[in-house]
Length: 171
Ligand code: SF4
Ligand code: SF4
Image (cartoon, rainbow, N blue to C red; front, side, top):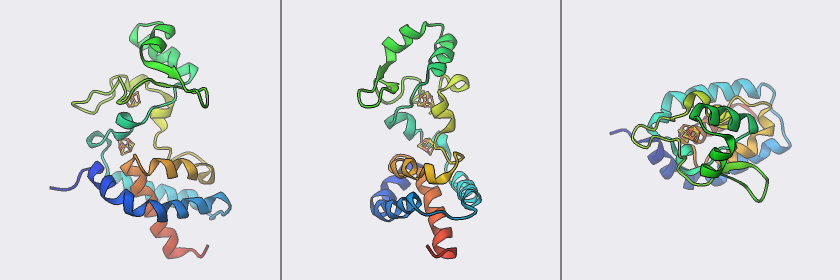
């Protein structure tokens, strides 16, 4: 049987984290012309290899940040007031003031199917995760460095990107 995304992550992250961190940190002060196209290609390869419905690790171990607009939209969808929704499931992060989930896995995850029960109105953070399309790449290298430990698609994407850059660029 082919390995699941989480099996891939558990097997590869521990042995790859140091070299991938070094690779990603280089983007703090170096630019590669055409990086967005390289990221697009690496992302396309990663998405051919990972199906989020066989994973859902982001919903199980991370929390999205809820914006005020998210809170308004989701509470209306659920037929609750924003305060009721906040009190039931959310809290404010003491370090940065972000509104986040009280617990993991996320209360909106259907653990049998890995579907999001509020998919149509899910937080913007969830809709854009794992942030492969965010630009410029050099502003998101530190986010990818955090996410390679949780997200198999990110681990694959960064590996593909590193392979391409190692093979074709001197930096
Ligand atoms: S975005 Fe990443 S962590 Fe979330 S379900 Fe997809 S592969 Fe898994
Ligand atoms: S809101 Fe939906 S997509 Fe976002 S973490 Fe919860 S279950 Fe996952």
